[in-house]
Length: 418
Ligand code: EPZ
Image (cartoon, rainbow, N blue to C red; front, side, top):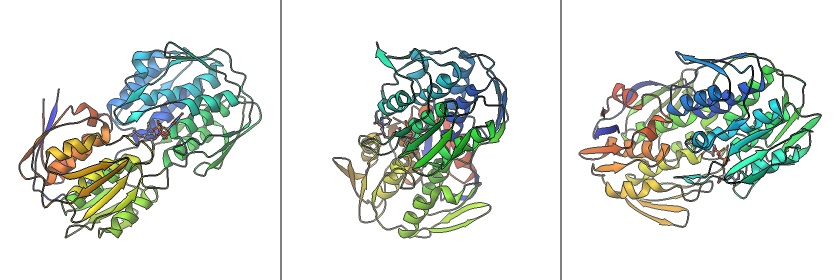
């Protein structure tokens, strides 16, 4: 099992190229099941989650190639069974459900279960699909949709945590082939949902309202093959932004889209960060420690839950008391116990982390638990006195393309040890 060994002390300086968005590429790859024609997708990051989704497409009958960031896929036929061992390893594989129903009128898929950031239910996915005519029943951990005659309808997709990203994706993809008009109320507005909608429109789908809480989809008879370039990864950009701030460095996040990070940029500026946004990307720097923060994670355009762990790392060494409340995945705090091992002073009150900024952290061997928690531990290691070993690095490789190489190029002392 690989680990990352980080020696703290370097300020990050220079330019980092932001990769394509994992959370945009995954549903777009699933959407290629909607057509028997060839799809070409550029700017796809080389991540284990992506390679896993390509393996799923291949097992479902598609012919897939992946070279230099470009995926070419053609699903002339689609098998409608997605076995447990594929879904349990990556929850996001649930987003093949909508395309499969739209293409084949039936589907069998295992329930994703939970993961280290908490329970990952799909009740809203299934409710939305059932409203379109794809009734499901669950038995032995599998979801069966034996027969789906998709008819458009007005559907409310809100849950107790607000909107659902992949739930919106699944219903939107199924609705592209439903008879008549589907209206999704309380849709997710994330940039990745917008990017998927753009991909579907290129395939011939009739969609308006993507990026707002209300998306309208007029069903069509068939969808065609397309070429598309995936948007930049706003969470990778945000992670390197925190890296620049925690080390009091000066970094250009090349290729990042400031429009996807308005909330994060605003909140970091309010803590004293310097930000310059332009066609090249986002230039972030600070010459002194920031001020503490009181923040709640929310659905887009709020502060993203996928940036919460990284923010905790930053605020653990920021003077003052910070309160960070997690409203999307209330138990997404596995990183706190590891940050404590490095000397962070933090208590958890319900779904709120109360961080008392310390003068410095101390390097220690720590355990990665989920994708963003592992990134947070690497960021903490960049400023800790001494050496930090982040074990179980496969979590990081799921969502960050060559993170050690990119950090080294910015001056960090970080090595991957097999
Ligand atoms: C997507 O997951 C992202 N993954 C997650 O990123 C991200 O944290 C999440 O959206 C929230 O922004 C991908 O896009 C591949 P949700 P998703 O459905 O769609 C509850 C990362 O680090 N819910 O928006 O699965 C759910 O439990 C990953 O890149 C239901 O109750 O998340 C959660 O509390 C981690 N019932 C909330 O809604 C449902 O049917 C939001 O979840 C569906 C969701």
